[in-house]
Length: 169
Image (tube, rainbow, N blue to C red; front, side, top):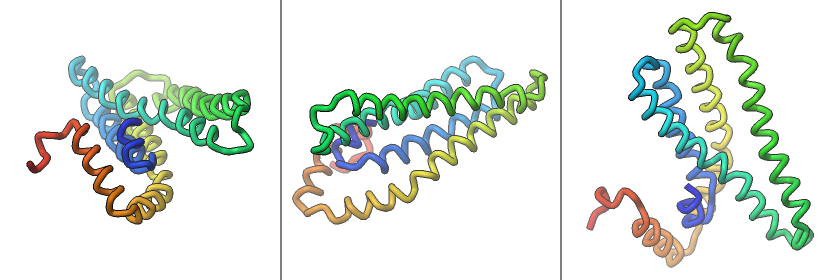
């Protein structure tokens, strides 16, 4: 995820797509949460697409902050800001854990687990939707790339894309 966001020089479109894809398995948990195999596959894909942005965002912000002339050489400030971002994410995740018993209603019935997965899916969807304004801004910026840069980015993306089978030769 980070690799592709570096190639197009903007992170929000890749993060948006990743988070949107991650929302799908979370909602699918509500359909079938009994089968071990299905749970394994859904956990794998939701973790892959949620974990990527979760790790990319603080490191990308730290990278962007290190480019600011007033902060160059001040690693403690950059680390503090990255830590605050990680801490806010962890705090929100921990807060959601307090709502799990409320959503389950103190009972561990299948219907209650379905409700829990639906709520978590909507929380993920809200996080994804919150990126739309930035995605539109970044897509406008990308559309204004010089033609030579667009071709270079496109060639590199196709070269390293895992979807080579679908690419026209």
